[in-house]
Image (tube, rainbow, N blue to C red; front, side):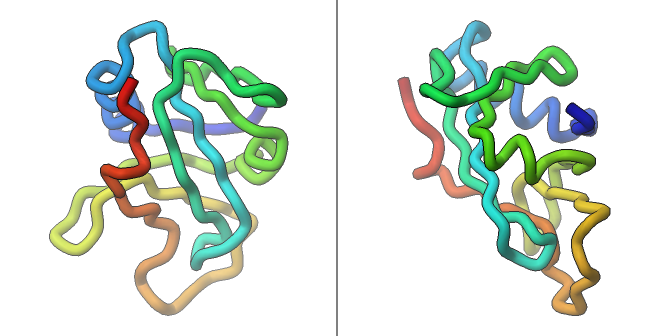
Length: 117
């Protein structure tokens, strides 16, 4: 799979896993078409992948990806953004049409979306 995770995203995801499950858990990332970057996301920390998930290891992180997410993330770079107006994962999607709203590709961090195991 052609997926890039930046050091900032790696740090964020690793912390989510460490504080919400432990080092043997994975990061389940559900991506759907939508939003300015062409992608919207939800994520949880899980002990095991769900039925139908693929396990992709990137930068030492176990990602649990449903089939649709895996297809949508092909060629995408996942970054982490922390600015006064935005905090969360950012998807740099070379296949998305440009957007003029200046909020493209940031999936805001919603603490309720993080599973506590």
